[in-house]
Image 1 (cartoon, one colour):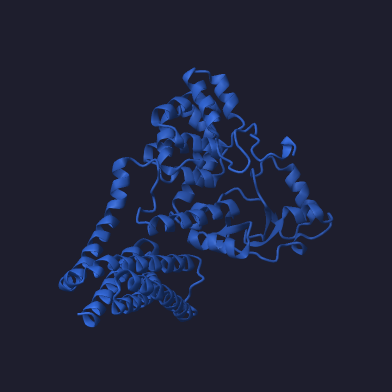
Image 2: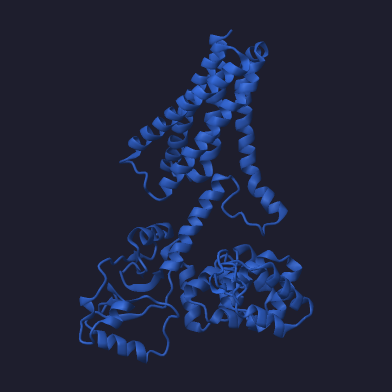
Length: 465
C-alpha cells in the first residue's frame, strides 16, 4: 500500500491522522527553540498549528516553560488561543502578554468570543481587554456582560447579517459584495421587518443557488427558531441539538434582533453540560481541571469524600447490628462485600442512565412510571441471574445449602433496590430543583449499601441462626 494511505503519516501541522494530537517530537522541537531563544524557529514551528493545538500545548507545559514560550512568541499570539484555553490558565497567560500584544490579539475576535474571554477574569484584566477594543465593540461586549451568565445574551454574537424581508436574491448578493465588513463566519442572512423583528433565515447555499429575481421570502428555511435574550443557554443548546439548527437570532424584550447564536457556541454549551455531569457524578466538582493547584483539587473533592464517609459509617452501623450473626458464621463476612459491591455497581449504572436522560429531557413526567418499571424489571432479571450464580458459588464454596438461598434472595433484593434508588433518587432531586448529577451519588450508594447489608445479614440471622 502506498504511503499516501498510511494512517501514521505525520502532517506538516504536527498532527497525526487518527489521533489529531501534538506529537512528542513537535513539542520537543518547540521547547528547543524556546531554550535557544530562537524566535524565528519558534514562529516557524507554531505557524501551522491550530489555535486549539497551541492551547493544548500551553496547558501541557509547566509554568516556567509556558511563560518563556508566550513571551518569545510575542506578537504572533492570536486571540483565538485565549478562547481555546481552559479558564484557569487564561488569567495567567493574559498577565504574561504585553498590553499591546494583548490588544492586537483580541481585536479580531467576534463579540461572543470576547465575552467568553472576559466574563471570568478579574476586573483589572477585564479592563485591559475591553480597553483594547474599538468603542462600538466595547459597548457591545459590556452590554452582553449585563445579561445573566448562562443566558442567550452571553452566548450570542452581535455581528449579524440582516436583509429587509422584501429584498430579492440579487439585492442581497449585491449588498454582501459591497459590505466593507462581514462576520468572519456566518451561515444565514436574517430577514427583518422595518422594526428589526426577525422573520426568517436564508441559508447562504440557497442564496447563491437561486435566481436573482427570487424573493428572499420564497427561500427561507422551514425551521426558524428565535431565542429571547434571557433564555437559559442550556435550553438554547438543547434546541440546537433537537432541531438541527445552524444559527438562530436572539431578540430583546421588544422582540427586536440583537444578535445571533451559532452552532459552534451552542455545541460548546452542550459539551460543557455533559462534562459537568460526568465530573459531578464522580464527585470532583464541575470546575475540575488538570491545571488546578493541589489545594484546589483537594478542596474540590473533600466535600463529597466527607459525604461518602458519612454514608459508609451508616452502612457500618447496619453491619454492627448483626455483629453476633457474623461471629457465628464467618462465611457471611466473606460473602457480604459481594452483595454490596454488585448493588453499588447496579445503582451507579441506573443512576448514570437516569441523570443522562434527565439532562437530555428524554425522561419526563409522562414516561416516568414506565421507565421506573423498566429499570426495576432490569434489576429483578439481573438479581435472579446473579443470585442463582452466587448461590451455586456459595454452595460449592461453603457447602451450606441455606446460605446459598440467603445470598440468592439478598442479591435479588439488592439489585431491585439499587435499580429503584438509581432512578427514583435522581428524579426526586431534579423535581426538588437540586442537580441530580451532583447529589445523587451519595444517596444511591447509601441505599444500596444499607439494603444490601441489611437484606443479606437479616436473612442470614432469620434463616441460619
